[in-house]
Image 1 (cartoon, rainbow, N blue to C red):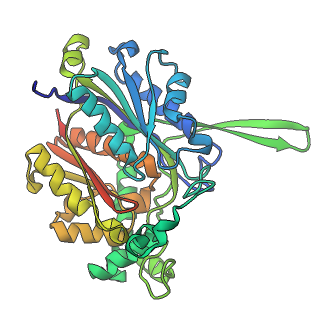
Image 2: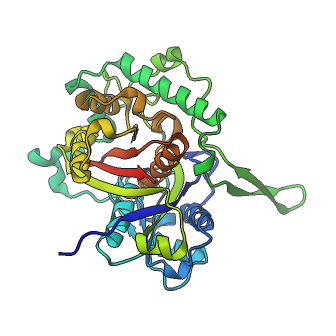
Image 3: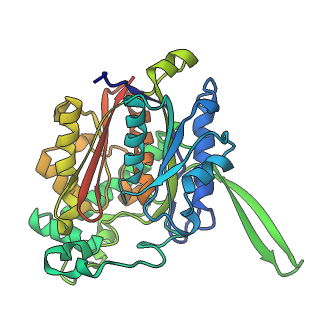
Length: 397
């Protein structure tokens, strides 16, 4: 068996994240967001001939409606890439984006491709949770499978109970997420990873009988709130269990957004004289009981470390998706993660969680953060619906 090649990231970018369902991207199609980040990523590597791109792998949690019909291939064509570039849409719920990156990297590592696009896109404004016409297998509701039927919030309650995560700890974690995100925005720490998005709004004008068209450009995530206080969070009622601790304030926000990276082989690096941002190191996915799906990263993180030949203390930056404060805290405590290394610029509670896009978005965040702070290794990890955890590791070049 021949030795694996290395896969390098030469571009990484993302859109701002909009709040759903009534935020800034409520009328912006997810495939249009995807087109914007694809074009932006390509612009970052002017020395790369787009004709060299083999395929585009795009993650999406609910690939139907405005993000159906193989959004990946449609976006490739709408972005102006050559007809020779393929496209496939993949779904691993919240880990769809990081799975797309891992799949693209693997194509390069085994020598089947030299240039790949990996991305994620999701509009929770246009496509609701569970999609438009969910059809659940009745066997899900049988005894041994019933955990699959639990709502995400209920699984977070179960994690909070089993790992003894208090309501106070969850609210404090949520407040810190907003504070860190606001500080990062004010310091311009998201700027390098961000693709500005032009929003077109059409409004009927009853006076003229015409449609008024306005344009505005957005460059910043919409979710972080400066008015968030511990007192305000403490007043919120539990939403998933009458005597529970999980609230809207200590849960991730429904969101819209997209992210993309371009990966190449070492041969293309040399041939096109490209400067890599990072090397893809390893990826792992592991299953856990569906009823405690939020704890998934505690199984995936050690597996990804082992696959990459690394130890926990070597990871300088963790992008741990904050699906719920309860599960994020449980993972941090269970694995003994250094809280200072976890989401230093805030997480999904403040910034949002556009499901299938999150893995690609957070990859852009950690790749640029490692460049900015001269760090060696970064990780993107998250829990996944129906009981999974995923983790991907990157090395700064």
